[in-house]
Image (cartoon, rainbow, N blue to C red; front, side, top):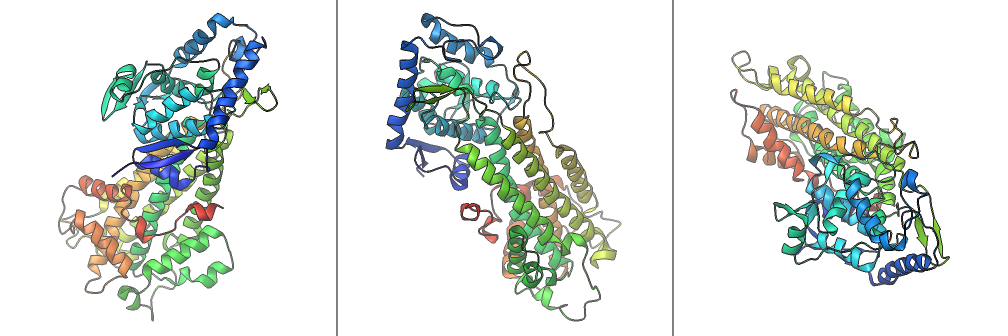
Amino acid sequence: MPASEIRIGAEPLDLAAVAKVLAAPVRLALAKSAEATVAGGADAIAALIARGEAIYGVNTGFGKLASRRIGDADLERLQVNLVRSHSAGIGQPLPQPVVRLLMTLKAASLSAGHSGIRPATLSLLMAMVSRDVLPVIPRQGSVGASGDLAPLAHMSLVLIGEGEAILAGERLPGAEALAKAGLEAVRLGPKEGLALLNGTQVSTALALSGLIEARRNIAAALVAGAMSTDALKGSDTPFDQRIHGLRPHPGQQQVAAILRGLMAGSAIRASHVHGDEKVQDPYSFRCQPQVMGACLDVLANAARTLLIEANAVSDNPLIFPADGDVLSGGNFHAEPVAFAADTLALAIAETGALAERRIAELTDTTMSSLPAFLTADAGLNSGYMMAHVTAAALASENKQLASPTSIDSIPTSANQEDHVSMATHGGWRLIQMNANTRAIVAIELLAAAEGIDFRRPLESSKPLETAHGLIREKVGPRQQDRVFGSDIDAVAELISAGAFDDLVPGLLDDAQLR
């Protein structure tokens, strides 16, 4: 299948485009209207240099060294030195989908023509994305202000034929990866190293990746929650639209509608719709619209912030060719991204926390009227006893990871850069948090499927029987104890692949963000 094309410099990148870039290799194409704009920015830099004007990061040092003037003969060396000296990242590499996205975001920022990048350099960056030449970028080393300098420096090394890159699954020296892809390294022009390094693209890509995964986990959690409600012989009355019309938070109303649709037509529900002994279900069942709706609203708000950032110019200094001005500012400060990542962390943690509570209720025979720990021969078999402990451990780990990162700051660069956002760290921890929540929801899906099996011959609704079938294709009923970890992994992989997404259509799409 040919790669999807993403047009840079035309329409703003939206969530659908972000999801495409994260999912698979893409082809980048620069809009015709942006070609002249990019060239105009580079020409403006050249004209200012020709007039002998001092321009930060072009013919001066960086940070605290901004007062040091650099001669014209050393302008290229200045940019190369910047890239090399700032390549100080350590730790495991960023995931390749995140690298592909951050390169795409960097290309979008540069295409606005306010960074002074030359068309040839932007063309190489875009060609690397199109041919899936993905630099090896260590994850640690950015504090989320003055841009994501260290990780973007490692990205930039490959453009000058240095560093390392992944091509077709092989880790290669940067120059070799370029050559194998039919590309040539560039020689950096004035300001180009700084333009490539300065920006919030790494933090933003990590946060957007976390957002997309959180949306997928929420979709699966809504399916799991509806299935658990049916397995518990719980009520769908709490999802009645009349209740939610009196408290019209958008997410709450959407989640209630989704849950109503998921449970509609269930024979299990019909079997106890009259004469229920239970008047009200536990909060983790009854309050799903209120809790998961709030999580969905958090995702929507974070998405708006992150899409603004994805289409923004976060370089410094900025070129305004029409005015002939070069202005120093602080668009590189990633505080909006840090706040968005922190709120995403809360939603991810709560998604897992609510699912863990439902697992606990399903395995407690006094609450569920199902066999203890969802096993027919409890005592000889432990059933879901330890699976729930795993869910509890992951939920608690997420609570610890959800602590805000944006409230931390530490001065750098001899106190010139004295307040930073820690947005990169805030975005990175979302990877582990989403993995934890995905596993919790996988355990709930397994437990709910087991509960549904104990309600046979009654059937659940059509969408929930579809979900049950997806689970049973991977994992059979637990008639006796067996190793549990591989079963959890199998269902977690279903969630990661989006197997439950179609059962929850329209969950946080671009139309909802307008």
